[in-house]
Length: 177
Length: 236
Image (tube, rainbow over all chains, first blue to last red; front, side, top):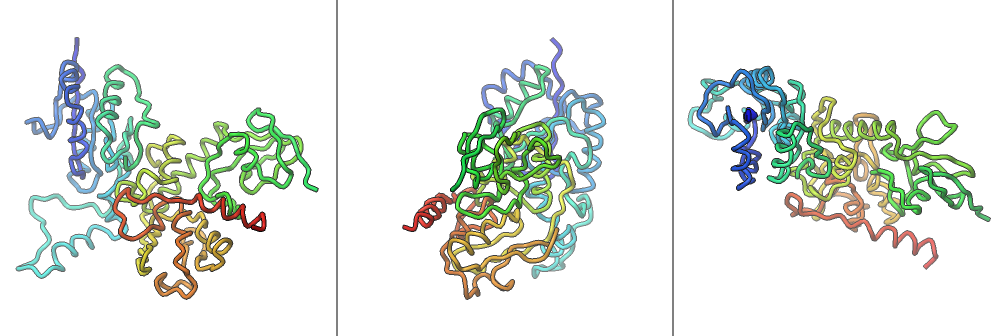
C-alpha cells in the first residue's frame, strides 16, 4: 500500500492546533500505518518536499516569511487544508489589523522605557501590515475552523481525506470552537 | 374582526391570523427561518435580511419578519437561492466587523456564530474590512464592543419599547452606522440609562456584555421579553 504523504506547517499561530492534532492519542498509531509524515515542525527536515498529498496549515499569513512559505507549500501540495481559526479567519493574529503592524511594533518595542529601544530588524522576518487568512493568499481546498478544532474533528477530517472523500465539517466544528 | 387566512409555507398547509407575519406563522408551524434582528416581543424592522423568503408572484425577496400573511400566499423559506443569499449575508456581517469568536464572551452561545454553522459558512470569501471601533466600558456594570455589533437594533428597540428609556439609538449611515447611547456620549455618563440590562440580554452577539466575564462565560437570557410583552398586551 502506498502511504499518503502528509505535511503540516505553522505560520502565525500558537501551535495549539498541532497540539490538538496530537491529542488524537492512540489513533496516531493507526494513522502512522497509512501516512508518511514528510514535513512538519515536529520532523527534522528543513525544505518543503516537492510533492505532498495533504498539507495542514496552522496559522495566519502575517510576515514576509509566512508569505514565501505558503506560496511554496501551495505549489507542492495536492490538497491544502486551512487548519484552525488563524488559518481560516486570521483570528487572534489579525486583531492587529485595525491598527497596523507599525503601531504594534512601536507599542511593544519603542514606547516602554527600555534601555536602547529598537525594533528588531535582523534575522526576524518583516511583518506584513495586514494579516490575512490563508485563502486570501493562495487557493485552499478544505477549511477546518476551530480554536483549536477538537481532536475528534481533526481525526475525522484526516480520515475522510485519506479515504479520498471531502470531509463534511458542518455541525462538527465552528469558528472559535 | 381579525380573519384567518390559509397559505402554503414550504409545501405545508398553514393557517394564521391576517395580522400575523410570515415569520410568526412559519414558527407556529414548526418552520424555522434564520434571523438576527427579529425577536418575539419587539417591533420587527427587517434589518438583518437573513429571514428573506420567496413569495410566489413577487420577483423580489421579502423579509419574513415584516411581511404580513395573505390568503393563498405561497412561500418558500429554504430554497438554494435563499441559502446562497443567507450565506453571503453572514459572510458580509463577519467581514464588516471584527468578530473574533475565540476571544469573545459569548463564544459557544452566539446567534451569529450559530447561524454560520447552520448555513454552512466555514470561511469568509470576501476581504475583511478590519474597521477601527473603540470599546465603551464606561458603564459600571456593562460594556459595548461595537466590533461585534451586527446593527440588529434589538438594544434600541428593547430600550425604547419595553424599558421606555430610549437610551440607545443609531448614528450615521451605511458602513459608518453605529449604536450609541444618548447623544453619542459615554454609556456610563448616560442620564437616561436605568441599568436594567435588557439591551445586554437581547443582543445576539457579544457586542453588549456584562463586565467581569471571560471568554465564553456569558449566556444571554432574552426569554423575559416574550413574557413581559405578552402580559402587557393582556393588560395585566
